Image (cartoon, rainbow, N blue to C red; front, side):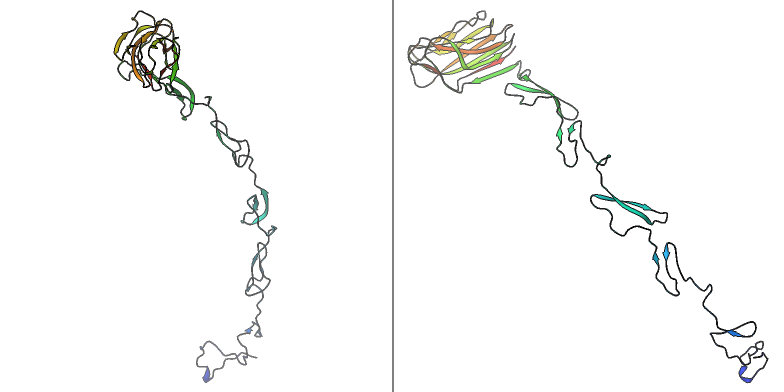
Length: 325
């Protein structure tokens, strides 16, 4: 084949500067070499990536191929449970390089094993019973109708000490300092003339105190037995006793002044009682002044004359006292 400049009527579209290759028979799959020959091009050389290695693997091949991450040496599986935790090593690319498991431990500060101080529990693990620490007080009941508890409480609301004190009426009504009242719950009968304290009608007093005493008695007696009474008081106490009583022969109400303010309560007063099966009321009043001796004030009584048939102080009879000094 030779190159020559020719031009025919069908070459009117060619540029004047382009000459037709005489005898050219090439196509889109061939190209002209510099020596004037034709050759078929190849797809080799640097026309595309044919393979991936390293962290990502693909090929070798051409066109579309599947890429996959390279393995790091770990074993496929599930790591971790309610009793084990995974231990993981990761490289700078965020890939897990090693993995293992270790049992969950409750030691080393991972949980409370013991409580001390105000609340006690353990030592141990899991569920433990908790209890409040003792504060030094003695377990028991404190307080009654005559005494009140005296309590010390700390800043946490706990009772640290507790004791009792007698109830005092100081400042509640005028100069009333204390009040006592006792009622009989059962009948008491006697068939002798020896005066002794009633088993229920009494109350405690302190030293150097003054008490105003009132008693109301419901009596059943027999003719000629009469009824004698007095107040039993601590040693050295003085005062006065008076009462409204019945005449021995009739139901006449009489005033009976007992002891003077300078006389000790050492003798009894005699009050007549008619024979009856229904209670007869007797009223008494007294002032009792104690000295240095503490003790009790009690209603002491007996028959005036010993009789076969007894004399009885009925249940609901009562004694009451008000302390003014």
